[in-house]
Image (cartoon, rainbow, N blue to C red):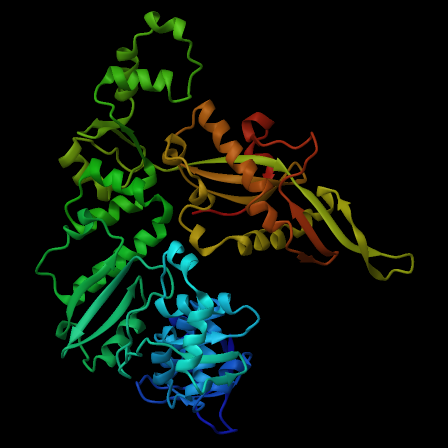
Length: 555
């Protein structure tokens, strides 16, 4: 919800509106802008909110901004029924502090609310489920709901009528979960790990990956200035035991938190490919944290062939199952699978391990020692990566037209423009393409979304969309950075992937964003449904570098 904050209840103080719950980075910016000090005491004033329910229950609009944000995280996880219970209980009990509201958020199971008395059997079953919190379906079906409802009403001779319904206290006893300083553990968003910090007998939690300010605040609430004064324990985590066992047991708290946080950031970046990374670690067997990071940085440059233990099985797999060849079973006796496997292995950087066969297509020299020591693989010296460009026609349209009197009007239907009409606006178009790219695409571009862990993923380290002028015509181009040359089948596979991005994903978002030019707003699509659309290499188009102008620059 939107909440307007200022430092104190002084009309001369600057106020700012922020969406709560907020990420720590946004909250930090607001604190700096309003000069709100970091403390466990009251340090801000709630001027207004888009949620009238919140304003109604606030005991005092002076509050601690971190407590406010924590409460909003709690409420953000509630469903509609739980929110009604919370606001009704707060309305009835009139909590005195923000800490009381936080404790109430952990105790809404102590209250039952009724909004409709037309069916007492249903009312009773709802009351029973609220009180018990979890009930077997059979038990609930067999319950005499009307009798239970009447019992609750008898035990609450003075129920509270609230704007949210009639509130009853049930048999559950409330507990103090929050002590006013150290926040109880609560995962607002998906995290890689929860770390428990213990100092002076008190516990505080940080959720990895996290920013430095979150660690600083945790130490402040523990009333200790240094991490080395804390015991560090991983409360819950998605780290594999293989990774955790690499961290030396005598690591200091500061280094342990720093290492865990860096690992959490890397694993969050890896995301859905974490299982593949675990497979890769089983092949390579890194022994230090630095080796883990180096392996993660180059993880897509590997191909893994589980269960392949010799040249013959490798050759058989490549010919029969990889999809690179059209294999006919009738040719079985005429194919020398072993020789093909040996020839292929001689022309690539690969090795057999206890898990199978592994191939490396990159040049990361940081991996040289571990690959040599553990697998006997020798990485070739760094060589310049190759650039491959795939061209496609652009569809360009505008809604801005000039009427017969020379004034600009907006058309209801798009008006198609020729590519020659917009070549003077190449810089504006390139800037628009750059704005359409996401921060998480910086390292690999749109290869970030390529799902298969195959030779295409290993050979293409990155690709991005751009635009260039070819023979005086503006064209779309996908620029690929290659670790190695692509085979014909690999080229076709990445063409299909790029076509999908141009049609549905990246391209769909880009074509909806106007590009401002002197001739009006234009809209560019990298794909169209006509039979004239294509995606081709410069060689397939029979064009040379001398025929190409502009485009995105890459170092």
